[in-house]
Image (cartoon, rainbow, N blue to C red; front, side):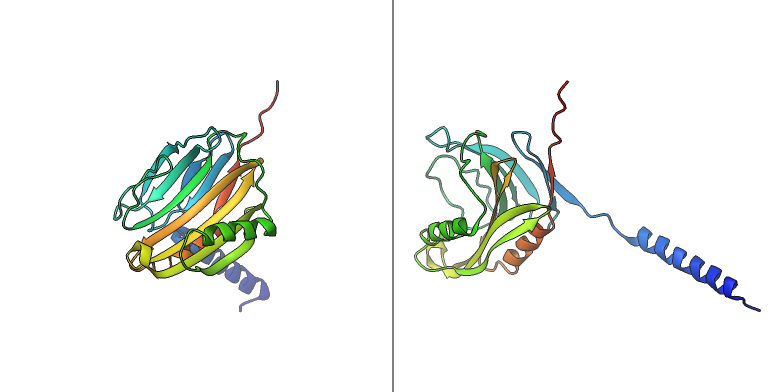
Length: 216
């Protein structure tokens, strides 16, 4: 005869076995680790088929507070561009994510994540094109405890880029008072779901600020 205790024991064993089996079949999530400059910590970005290369350099300009430290995740299917100066040749197509910071921590400290800044950024972006982009994202998004100003837009068959599709997601935050910018950029005949997938990558990013130094 099966007693209540027997049923509970067998049920517990079955549930325990299923839990162990599920854990064994679960693949660990892989992240690309980006170390931020000025000891700000790390960004952990989910690995994506969009990106398979990484480059780091300083984008030098002609003023002390204009230089930018950049890290770029790119794709080997497209030309590699490590821009320098104000003028540089644009590749015919691209699919990349660029993380940028001021070269000097004391520069560009006036930025704020707020709705007034969203309007300033939208006006600036609109001025770069000869037509109005389709705004897909225009919001403040909290990612792992940090507020990001997020703008995402699309232009189909953009004439200046040989009628290619343009999708771009700009996400800007402050970490320890310093501006950090993520720029997801696709320019090709068919960008597919690049914009929405980029927003998903942003939402699932982990931010690991540097641990405060202990004074002795």
